Image (tube, rainbow, N blue to C red; front, side, top):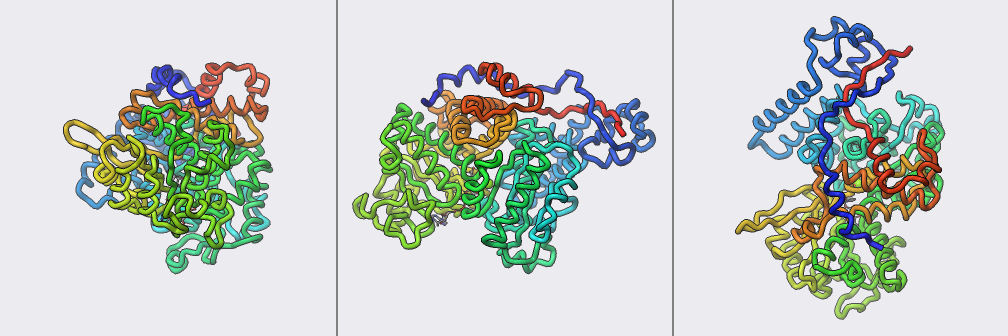
Length: 605
Ligand SMILES: NC(=O)C1=CN([C@@H]2O[C@H](COP(=O)(O)OP(=O)(O)OC[C@H]3O[C@@H](n4cnc5c(N)ncnc54)[C@H](O)[C@@H]3O)[C@@H](O)[C@H]2O)C=CC1
Ligand SMILES: CC(=O)C(=O)O
Ligand SMILES: [Mg+2]
């Protein structure tokens, strides 16, 4: 069932990052001329326009005479980035992070080709700036940082207008949309319109990891108000100054947006991101059978966590079938925590063949009120299936604290998706030393860094050096002394959502099925070699995220074909997809990925 490490070795040979391409890129049609091109980041090449192109496009005289090559421009940008790093050394972390974000954002606003090349080639350094953790800081300060709009904004005031508004977007084709209502941005709560930074960051990862053409992405903010009093009182706040819409009023706005998008771009994939839990589940159920859509926090996170949980079983030197015997404490009963539980329980049920009721026995769910049991008043219907019988474990009652649960259960895995920084305190971590596992796993998956359930250093210090550790935001590996290293994994849905979107897009699937999501998770789980697993490495390095995404995308595409959901994409029809073997699918996915090079621009009226 789980194709474990068998395939991993063959994949390793495939991992080099693509060098500067020497192939001559095809032409790109542009409907503008002159200064309009220089001010359009999709087409702008700055000083890189060849002289013939300057003549053809009316650019002569609008640029200094010397033509600078793409490679020189890239080197120049990286030089200024590195000197900024040097010059800001010793300054407060937040100041440095925002300075780095600004220099990248300026390039993004000016020249997207160069920006994405820099991002792809330096993904390890730049992901923490354009994605978690810095993106959280950017969202918190968005109204002050705002210079130029990016993406689209649909507000409660636009009701009845969305069908026409969607045609204001300048691109003819959109493939990938990331949508938020700003109600639960990372672990930072309701940030209203300022949450737009998240769809922007996620789509940057789509371009960098999945090679989605940046002219075909669309970050969207649905501004239905905010319940964040501080923002409502902030005179610079750029969103609607009203409390969040609720109930029918709210859902009618989302309905209208979904209809508008699919009228103009019937094949566009919509990723729901950072919606508060009640609307995350409600919208997923409402749209997943009608549109090609998924919720990243529920489904993407679940797949990444499951891959990590299976890695933790392998790290103990046990067969994957032992997953059913692992005792797992999940801290956080929100969209992410419940998404993980649902997928993990299904996996246990499949592996053990004993059904879902039995599969739940070894999972323990904790929320802000402690252990969730059937005695809980007003239990959330989504959490109810995971509520324990009170007394199922001797001495553990409704609302038992995390420390009590860890001491009694002695779990193999402690997994945090609570959004609460430091909730895995020293006592809880020390209690993990008594785990029934020889290599206990600790996942502090909440973002950004301040909201992580514990730091990597504390985890290794208090829970012991034999743990395996994952965190949602990056931490440095921990020096354990004597040349030993505590490896830090980034347990983040970034390893899956780009491949889910890419595979769904290229398959032309009508919907994103559970089978497609399971295939994505299995693929990630089988990517790591046993040798790496023994070192505590559960996820590959972010440096090879493009290669991982190819594999995940191919697995998702294959699953869509197997389930007869694939309707084909562009010139590749469903029959051709059906006739492709695994290697041909991988080759097709790789070939379909956009890569940043300057294409010759051809003016078309
Ligand atoms: N690493 C990754 O890939 C991902 C990480 N996340 C992170 O997970 C966190 C939670 O996200 P959601 O589930 O969407 O949020 P949510 O708001 O829906 O759920 C939070 C849950 O944590 C519980 N909680 C709050 N305080 C607690 C405490 N002191 N002890 C135990 N539980 C407590 C709440 O009762 C609630 O059940 C966020 O920080 C988010 O950034 C979310 C998705 C992906
Ligand atoms: C990573 C992510 O999706 C989150 O923290 O919400
Ligand atoms: Mg999210």
